[in-house]
Length: 394
Image (cartoon, rainbow, N blue to C red; front, side, top):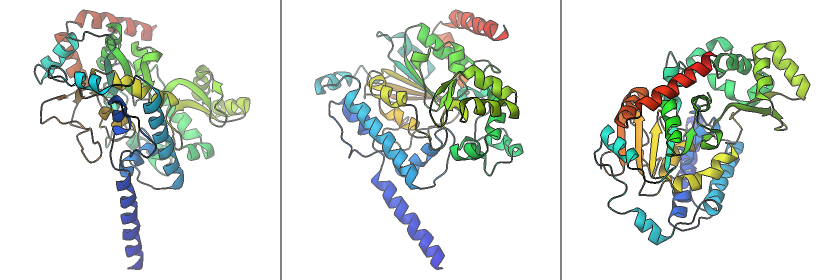
């Protein structure tokens, strides 16, 4: 009984602490209104931020001091970005952004989205956020789907738990499982999907401000999205470094080492005097500095936010949907609704009011392919697809 009471009391204390960090995305939103923020500005609820421990896969709710320090470090970087990056928006400018002709669709369906894209008068004002759902049709499994997800397929790796393969501490003690996984998921084995190519088309049409991706598969790069237009929030296989010194290592060497198996990565370790891995965010690692440095400017200038193939549960990535100004219209293309929680996401989607938010339910590639047709981009899309397919086959 004493143990049960102690457990209940501990849970209540943790939840009360979490409430003190209750959802408030005004860290950057206040910046857009011309008000500077301070370190005392609250951040999204700690219970939701537990996902940041493994930024792209974890649903763990463990609570430790190192984790809290990482949360505060990331929070401080967001505050710094809000106070130092991007233009200060005056209240007059904010009022101009919230006019009746802005922040609305002509119709709340795919035709309305196509019309919105066609009527984009300014260049590079569309921000795209994507998750694992856009890569499933390429043959890359997501992480959590029972039976087919990555977690379900890691049983043969003899791990203490599936998440351990992306745990920095576990990697230091037993790097072999991760290097084995790298052999299976290394980019170049998969072809970009229509959704990846659509993002590349937005760049070609000079409409793309930035693409924020949770994926580590580098398919956006393979589709033709340039590195300056892409922010891999959880890292990818485009570069590599030593885990202790951070010294850059040619990614080609890491790929060659992984392909040789046990001897390969051991030789690489001996050459550099430390373990080397692709720059994928692991447990115990902070998100890339470029992520925090770019958020304020990118989202303050965003006219249209397109979110595709993500459940919007992983923080701090999920919080980004609350950063655009009120004039920005937002679209979710996904198999199921996401990002509507008002407790976890104060500026979450509101699809019922039919104002600035639009939900297009269905398979990402099917919806995007139909959108490309309505935009009259089919010819350009086919040319781009053939170019990329020829490049891969060669």
